[in-house]
Image 1 (spheres, rainbow, N blue to C red):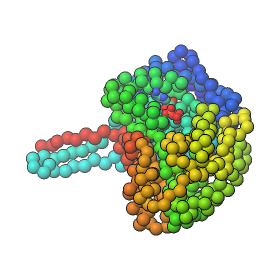
Image 2: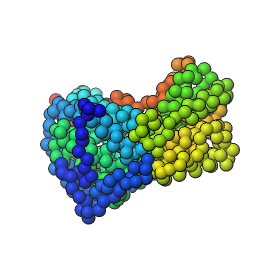
Image 3: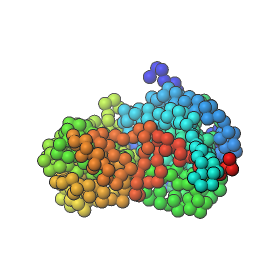
Length: 483
Ligand code: ADP
């Protein structure tokens, strides 16, 4: 677009406000998932680079945390404006490194920018409290102080938003950060660096370290006692590993982990809305989202009608290179993700599931998989237990409310659930009984910078977004005062 400004493309590490090479000069390639060709290469941060970045963040901390909250807020607000001004370039970059179709990338950039606007406003809402001790007559004074240097580790499925959802609240709270973006999609975060600089973020406050040595790099940073928060979004398995690493220095862990979202449609649901919501909950990001609907439970009275309509919608989607006009479904991010999807569908088929539409990989180059609906999926199928992370909708029938709640809750995950019914009081009662950090009631999308995003059970610890997200980067201090 004419109004959009160009952004500088850099592919070094970004430490203390400078782009630089890795300590051992190592680099790795970033692959375009639509062509399987390398896009470029980026510097591959080592443990030594991690230590240097923590030094930079620790050096920048005193001045940044002492800055007036209003000044920090205004810097964040300028970052919002600059991201919006570069929406098209950032969206194109996301599509090129992640594969998602341009409309999805544009929505992601808008969502990513909103975290800067929201936390520009939250930066000035760090409230404490004073109360009178019930028996001693002392005063209880409570304030919230910046937690300190924070290590932020992000996944490849939302290369912009999973970063800004952590960076913006950390900066609002007065923390400084080292960000390790996913090695599949490091370019979007690197493109953010000059924008943050232009917004007025001082050197060392935000550092970016792409790396293929994730374990060694993050391990070295977590050994440094100046690091006080590790905020991670990714798989439950990697989350468990990071929790173990965080134990040594008792670093505050904030974990956004995997999901296995049930999508429940009662017999009294508005079926048009349920199908539209199902398409969003399943197909936003081609299913590569921890919030993606992973299991559809449909009341037996409306099951056949729902399956037919969902299959019609899924089969009419245009699959292709996400940069092409009209394409709404791009490739999956890499061969491993595509192969996992293929194996889950094969497993369900061998156990007796019916493939209503799709059910196959599409010819390459590019890691394409056809939008798929599976019906009569038997209980043992792996796709009901594991995160699919692809465009596959397994559907099962149910009869009673208590039965479907028990089946929905029968998982180690508890991130999000979706419920469709026209009866709001029934809907709210069902929401309360679901073991889930978030529920979409007659909505297929719950993500909102103003809402607390997060899971229960093995889906995570802590919340991102809302005022809660700010609190994740603050420590409470209580001063007992002889008044
Ligand atoms: P995904 O399945 O989405 O790739 P991962 O949990 O493996 O999920 O990756 C999410 C993020 O965690 C990425 O930035 C990845 O590089 C990083 N990561 C992977 N393994 C480790 C590790 N052992 N320590 C720290 N970070 C890791």
